[in-house]
Each structure stands twice: as structure tokens, then as C-alpha cells.
Image (cartoon, rainbow, N blue to C red; front, side):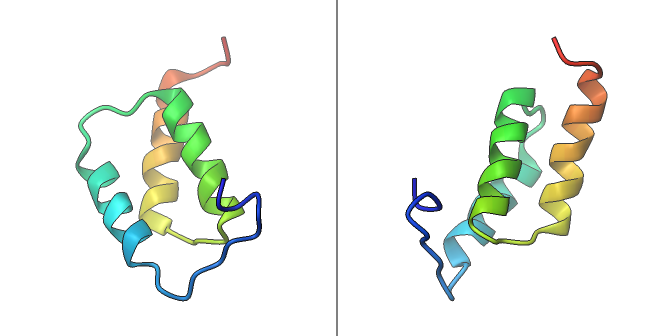
Length: 65
């Protein structure tokens, strides 16, 4: 919702904390991974660790349903 209205923040503490929680998550669902990749892109937030974690979920699942 924030990205839809063009929200941009100079302080990325909230997103940094959220990404740290995702890194600790033992198993992420593919829908959550894809949605969060889009959200990070829409908020113009770059996270190499997040990209790697979410990409691994997508690659692990394989072909689309």
C-alpha cells in the first residue's frame, strides 16, 4: 500500500528489521517470497540478502503451479 502511493523513506530501519526476521525464518512460502520481492522493488529498497533468500525459495519450489 505504501509503494502504491509513492511512499519513500530515507530511514530504512523498519525494512531492515523486517529483512532480518525473514533471514531467520526457517521456511518461507513461495507466495510470500514473490510478494515481498515485489514490495521491496516497489519501495525502491535494495537488499542483497533478501533477494538471495527469496530467490532461493522460488528456485527450490521449481516450476509454477
